[in-house]
Image 1 (tube, one colour):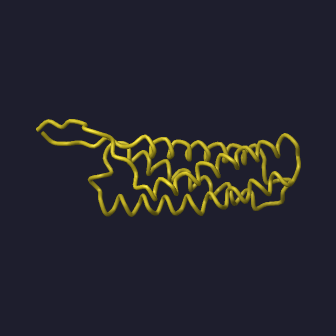
Image 2 (cartoon, one colour):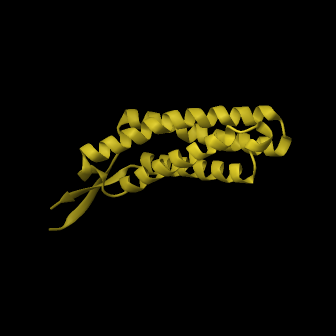
Image 3 (tube, rainbow, N blue to C red):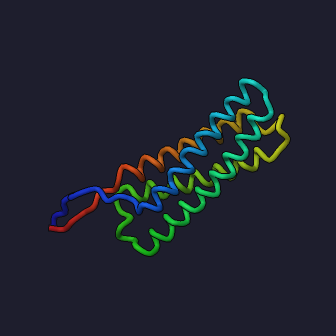
Amino acid sequence: MATVLTYREALNPLHAILLAFPVALFAGALVSDWAYLATAQIQWSNFSSWLNAFGLVFGGAVLAWGVVSAVLRPRSWRGGRGLHLAALAIMWAFGFLNALLHGRDAWYSVTAAGMILSLITAGAALLAGWTGFRGFPREEAL
């Protein structure tokens, strides 16, 4: 039986709205980490900590939505949705490690390791946003 890709299936609108938050928040945390390394102003570290914390809150909601959706409708998670769910899981895991690193004293919170964690977290958030907003191919049997 042949299959043909007919159209791209979009995310649930609420899932898409929630997904926009961690993309912006983790990218903002990366920029504020970079600003802290460039200026040594402690307030940038505080901004990064808060942006990362709220990114984890919204990212956790998006990840939970994705896991529940994958469990309840496993057939709909073919194509690029597995990559989307993996990117969400990586985003949240590295964001959590980054939050633990930012919980230290401000002078030690953003080091090269913290910048790498922020870069991985923001990259995974952007990948999750890209895979989520581009839509997923839907297979139809002929």
